[in-house]
Length: 94
Image 1 (tube, helix red, strand yellow):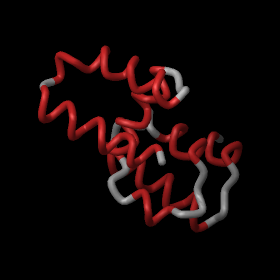
Image 2: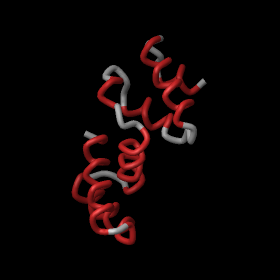
Image 3: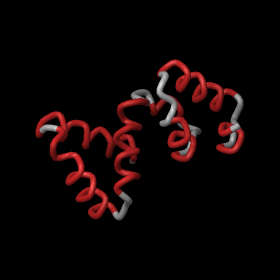
Image 4: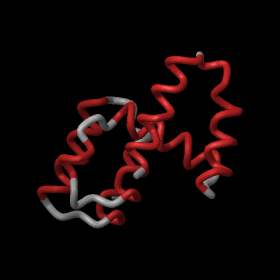
């Protein structure tokens, strides 16, 4: 759900310009009963984890935790390790 929402937002922002970002985040948040920060995280999720379908056994909490990792390779490493080792969110946070 969050990855698809992020994809929709990304497409909208590309088509209409980034100047509408804050307004769009607030409107989408109200429409989906989410916080604007969660909507922003959905966009970052889409942009930073394009192959999210390959990590099927990870929860949204796993993904949110690694969104702050700027380095693409490091982020992929942690996601791969979480899948391979069946890490909980707490284990991934360590």
